Length: 412
Image 1 (cartoon, rainbow, N blue to C red):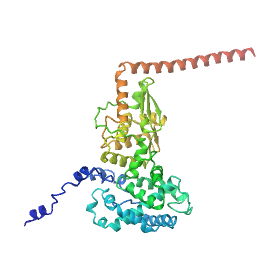
Image 2 (image 1 turned 90 degrees about the horizontal axis):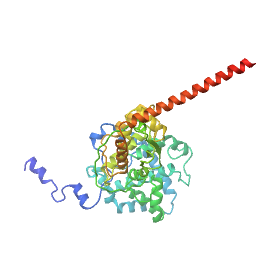
Image 3 (image 1 turned 90 degrees about the vertical axis):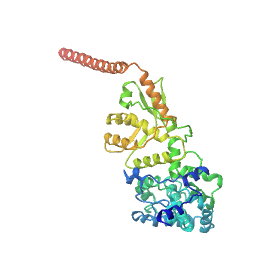
Image 4 (image 1 turned 180 degrees about the vertical axis):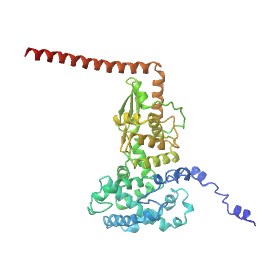
């Protein structure tokens, strides 16, 4: 048998395509590998800098120091439940080891994690670390059994590394199945009916529905729990920047969440949630977008909102206008830097015509396109006349004041 024949003989003709198997079994792998062609553009945005969660980045040299703190977290966690043997956690996790392993795309190619004991140990250690750090982050660490000077879980140390660690925890390839955290809380003695509520709070989601992992829950919280499941429809984008819309009389107002995005035609008011941009959020939004594009949801709410903002932001003047209205919240050095960030975020973004941001964008376009072509000039002219009138009034007042002052001085 030649090399070609040997290769063919090793093919699995029974099971075939693993992705079709997942579809047939109505299951998904919620923890994906980001395609290299996308990752190569900005590796730092997709790869952890401080902590590895799950199998993909375990053992990377620059992440090893955090393993010490993971084990410390495990010690604290186990000490709080002295009546629950550590073996109880591993035993319960082993019952779901096949399902947990299948949550990761391409994990079958990593020989290290085919050993059940090693994989379960990874799930236990990383799961406890997540629970401990998120509890401190959300202020629900009631026992306060960490020292104040603790570099990770203490008040001072936590504040120092909060942004960097949170960024790592929201990377698409750095996730842990929701089921792991649910199992850990269940074995530790938390009532079953309280588990989803507790996890939704510490995982930044306002709703109690279980998610796939932290990134998924964070997205649910960010999008306000929108559950539209319509077919993907593309719409043509007509670009009207924020400055241009403002000249047409469109006003901008902030709202609390993504599902409150609206355009009120009668008042020409576009309502948008704040979009925070800093050196950490860029990476987070790139991973949220990558997850949304690969996930099982048919909607693309976040991608559509990014596309909407990209439409509004063409220059630093647009950023300045939206920033003054509280819609863009930026800690970057300049408004021009925000424009560059939006260019980066919009790459590989798909616009879903059924999503609320897309529908609102369409309404805004229709509003502007429906106005007479001379309406902008009229609005612009009114503003000039208004300004000129204001200056004229000021000039008259100044003249009157000067005349009165002259006469008063003369009378003296």
